[in-house]
Image (cartoon, rainbow, N blue to C red):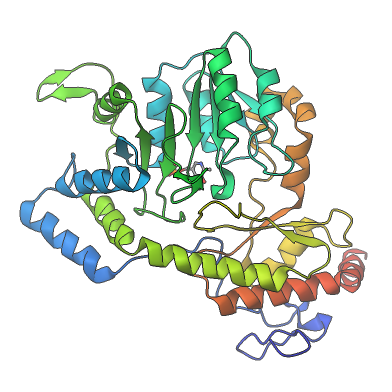
Length: 414
Ligand SMILES: *Cc1c(COP(=O)(O)O)cnc(C)c1O
């Protein structure tokens, strides 16, 4: 970026006037798409050494030594009694819902990834959509309390963007209701709440180790819990219900983690602190570069808690001349594949939109946040220089919002 705030996109595509924007025919700021949550990866040599071990033993899945080692290391890191690995986070959630025998209604935020709603729906339960807190964007405990009925069997909060839910308030509501409290901790590996690692709260916390997460195993997930009986049940349920060589205690599924996935987990775990440091540096670079842009605010992490800061989340002023969707469109043309997570809210996705049309009226904060949020490419694989270039591009777009608006309108009218 030069002194006037223009972007030098390597190929010489400096955004000096509107015609330089890719949406108006200019060269894209990035030659290849810059995706949100480009996967990080530890040392390939480490990964290959683990593969050599699996080759020698011919042990590729079924509670192999690598999966067993990863479970132990993760439990230690999370300071929790059990970390039960699964093939993905959604399977981990489904196994937990089933193992706890949940029934009737389960309260979840609408502003989250759709998988939890699907798990409940497919299990014959009713997802009851709760609004989010206007400041933290995690499930609104006050609204949650009002949604509790005699049929409520659980509350499932999401530690959105790795920032903890109001764990204590939700715990009190769950206790009053005689319901379980679970957490979708897919964003929160390595985050703390009140200085303690996320993973120990509620009855259980569910992690996703999908390739786009801060810590990953290509595909994978885990249930973290201090409940011995639940952990035992999950281990059997993820393996067809087997409790011995020829003994099956119940109808289970196949949700095991293979050794190659565990190998990736062990590889990534070895360099995780350095990975998180890079991710925090990218977030820092964005925060500084975006700080003074009018009409845009950066979601702050809790200053007194640890987090990988894997997500770079901004909101746009709803009164800005360009809509959020237009800004996203302009960024996509520049090969900055920013996303509108979790637009439009689960309750407006099928089948929930048709099944529960009344939900929308009770979710004003969800609606507002979902309409204004942009998630930018963040995480350990984004360099400070890339973060500055994306920020510079956003600055150019927002500072020229009025003329861009005019040009988009002119293009639209015949
Ligand atoms: C990624 C994610 C999931 C799903 O995890 P999978 O491992 O892909 O099944 C669930 N919830 C949230 C909040 C996520 O971000």
